[in-house]
Image (cartoon, rainbow, N blue to C red):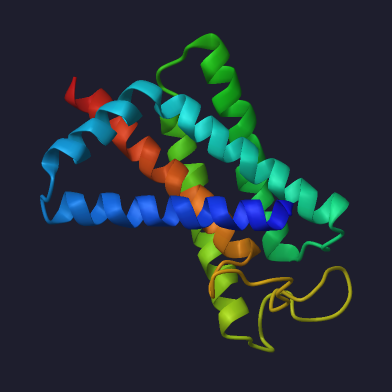
Length: 177
């Protein structure tokens, strides 16, 4: 049930990001793009915090309740996601404005690791960074696939990408004002 909910939320966020990018690139319905940008400028910290919190709780659910053992690349993604919850949470509490200078590089590196991990899941490779049996499971191991493409690394990538795009909008609006 939780896995289905997280997969559905990932699907919705993927649709939203693709729709936003298409509308923005092709200048279609510019009024909607501007409304979304205004919403992100106003509530971006809260949005990014919610995404990081859901991603963190989801990863903890997978390893501690569903008992999916994380591989090395999963751990690296966690290293970049978990601090985002604290950084964004403190920034909301303290009402700091420069938090996205820290959020953007963390989310960018986390997204790169996640998409690299996803690549090894859809193209299994015996030379994957954690393919050997020993300290962790193989990076090629896929616990589930929903909607034909959503796996745990894709969920991670989606969360990192969303947080990165929010930080991009927030930093761009800060630099323009």
